[in-house]
Length: 211
Image 1: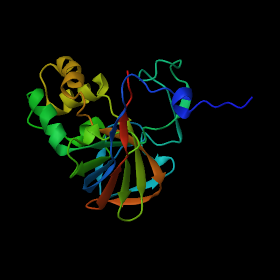
Image 2: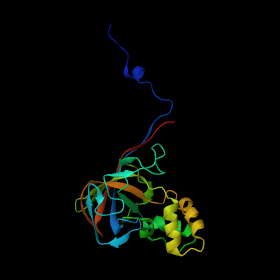
Image 3: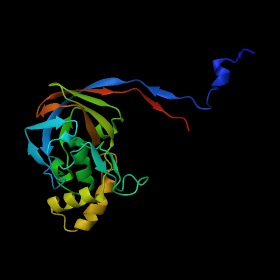
Image 4: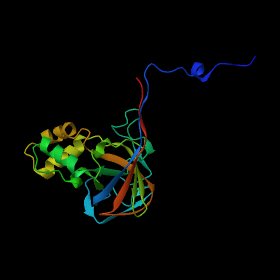
């Protein structure tokens, strides 16, 4: 017997509608670049970054895979997994807010292991996963997620800023930098990124999953 059910009967509507936010394009720029020595997460200013599918050549966070840590409680610590944290992106305006909350004059991008200082994107840390950054000279990187602030970065800030109570600074940073710590991303199309380079940011269509 032929099934005559309609799509609406096979897939009944949910109680809540799905809110769709259209995709959009933004213009941005590379304000500064940084690279980490292979043995430490803090970075140093450079004029260009050579990006491969493993990330930044010789960088502390380079690699196609990485070991899981506290951010992945669903795996035993040290489990090999895909490295979606090859690059750290931050914005000067957001770091200024964090510094103010911590009572500091400034927080430099290199203190927290940033690789790219991006300007021109309002609330950079809120760019959704899947956003694409197309660099003028051909590189493309893809946003994985917000970079959750941690005590390790907080301790680096406290030490570099000369805070009297470094442990208190390490504890304060995760609270002060919540949703302002920037983004982590990975290399989709390799090449060389240079300071001052223009970027076209493609923000994907988003939706709010009904609860």
